[in-house]
Image (cartoon, rainbow, N blue to C red; front, side, top):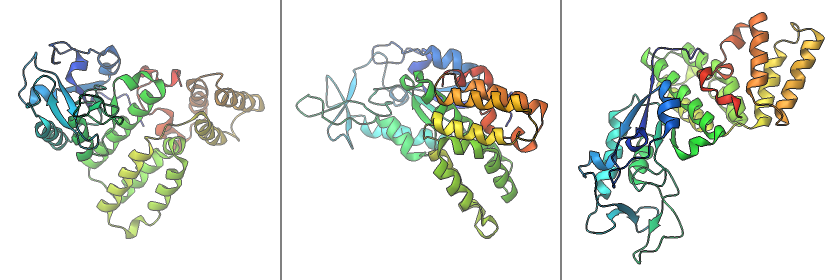
Length: 320
């Protein structure tokens, strides 16, 4: 899959992370990771739920209060300020009005945008033992459950960052496929291109989705395609481990067993083992495999998303 495309993939983002002064205190939470690194390759589409529903800047802070499974968003100084329904409604509206989004980056710990671990307060003013989700984020994720979503703070973890961007790229590829008119042959081709990527993240799903497409000619294409993508994008949320990556690397290396000299095979096996043991990052064996692929072209491998799932300039595999 070629990722060197002029089309910038749209990702929603909490507006305070872009540097806009939209927080309750008229401040921001500018994220250089988002704007300077990811912003070079993705079209960051900003949303601020509080501003969108008509609250000013600066404004009274809000917090979540009540049952952590269904809290209310109330003012901290004036609890009569209740914007629960407005935040939930805006989350649903954004999900419905922006089907082009291929991901969303949220502000952590926010009573509107926090994906998880947001404090919920009891009536006595003390935090409840359980935490919740920001109401905008909750409605957004419920309305579009297959949208890749991550918090900005968690993106500082290289594995979580790589996982999120992988899901964004796969979502974008799926949307492009749908825009051209999905056919049975195109669905089979899409699955073939993403086989090794899926195997690295979720071997059980790799087998399950293969079986799902085995009787494609007898199935309702639209229904099966929806079920396929739902399973795929949820399965890709599983973090790929060094062990599962090593398994895929060995599968790919097997394609060169008749092409490489003995010392080249030995070098490749050694690098894969070094990666498995944590001695080198994933980019090292991947680079060698791509070198061999250039010298010994293989049509099947050349189309595998696993070898180049996102722009190489993001350097996501340099730290995992």
